[in-house]
Amino acid sequence: MKKAKTVAFVIAGVLVVLGALIMVIGLSRGSFDFKKIFEEGNVMEKTYVIQEKVESIQIDETNSAAIEIVPAQDGIARIETKEPKNYEFVIEENNGVLSIQSKSNGMWVIFSSPKATIYLPADEYKDLSVNSSSGSVKIADGFTFETANISSSSGSVEFKSNVNGSLKIKVTSGSMTMEGVKAAEVSVDTSSGSTKVIDVEATGDIKVKGSSGSITMENVVCDDLSAENTSGRISTKGVTATGEVSLKNTSGSIDVENLTARDLKSQTSSGSIHMKNALLEKIMAAKSTSGSIHIDGSDGTEVSLEASSGSIHAEFLTNKDFSASATSGGVHLPENATGEKNGTCNAKTTSGSIHLSIK
Image (cartoon, rainbow, N blue to C red; front, side, top):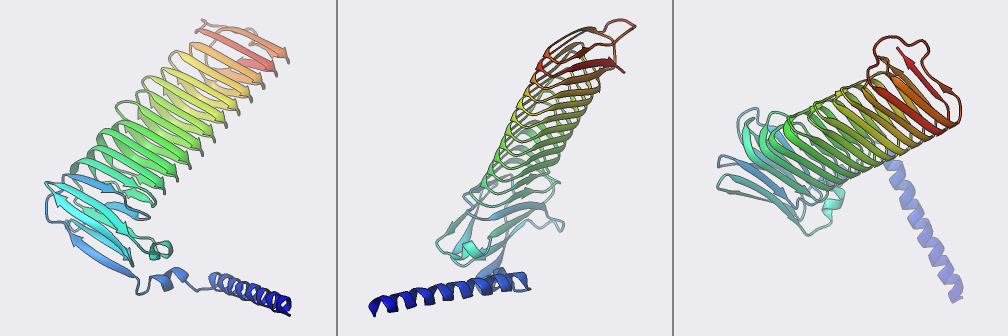
């Protein structure tokens, strides 16, 4: 008898849970807004008017909060916040330093994301420091900082302002987008998430490092450029570098288009390498352990192409002193090439064919 009652209770419990689950799914697919229901009466909207002239911004330990810094179109420096129940932003002003932290001791933050929007005059500032444990970070255009250091453990980062000195962004889990930025030097480090560097100009070096996720760089101007990735594609388009461009990938392809630099060194363990309209003053080096190498309308004076398992097809703009070897596969070199030889080209592959030509 007891066993029958126990079985009945278990079945009843399962049916209750199953019914609740079906109800939640059904309401979610309709117009029912759980977030809105949870926020009603449990989220407060506040406005904090900044009294002092802001010189530096320090944002630290903003747990689960979205942070956004935007120009104050009306000229009024202020902070507008959304604070769930048992969550509070702690704002302080001290000798020109605007400090923002948070404290929480409740569960409502799970159902509603806190947010702080900082409105500041579009002006020049000293230092910007943001350390976010969980939540997105957005820095709009219109500002100029002496230095900027952004760190996010879990959440996307978007940066669009100028920096006179160094700009450092580190994201553990989340995407990173940098766009329309001028800086002295740039350093980006992402562990899991895509990285985009678009319309960025640096008087010094740009360094990008990723672990898992694609790296995309377009319309970039700098001295030296280095991009290193563990898993994911590396893509560059419209890069101008006065020094060396170094692209290194463990698992993923490398794609280069419309690049001008002194040297280009590209290497991938597993993936193909593609170059189009890459113009190098000196070194053009491409090495793939497992994958093909394809070069179109590009040139350099010291060309080195190496593939362990994959074919090599390259079309150059000028004649060179060509040499090529393939352990398993055919070799085709330019025939009846005329004109002065502009440097050397050495190509070799273990397994695959080699085809070299002049445009």
